[in-house]
Image (cartoon, rainbow, N blue to C red):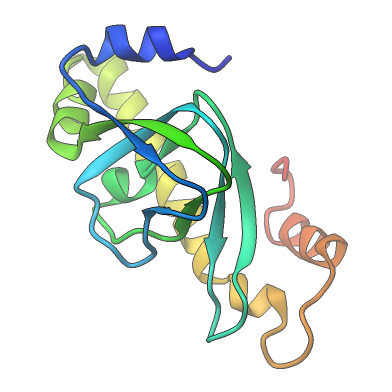
Length: 160
């Protein structure tokens, strides 16, 4: 269940929010992860540009969704670009705050949770890196159904 704007503001009371206008870029693929963004209102789309082609839309995000967690968890550059589909208000949380927040529980449970998140993040980044192969960059892009079947085959037993 997604947290609402009020809950996010209580969790990060000192953080500022920012307004993004329609078609404004919230984060850019390849950029460094200096902050985490939490959408408080509005909608955004996640795009990945593959070898100069038109961007492939990977997801649509709305209120309560988080942007930039993969980069913060893996220490790698941003894996996709996120663009506002209309007016978007997002809470901006510096990466150092996120890392210190995640490091708060130093017991076995906290270590396990962090390791699980980092493992899932790395797996997702590896999948995103293989996307050109599944999109069929040597020919016409495959259909969404073909891509879904390829991912199911690659991750047999995982829900896709």
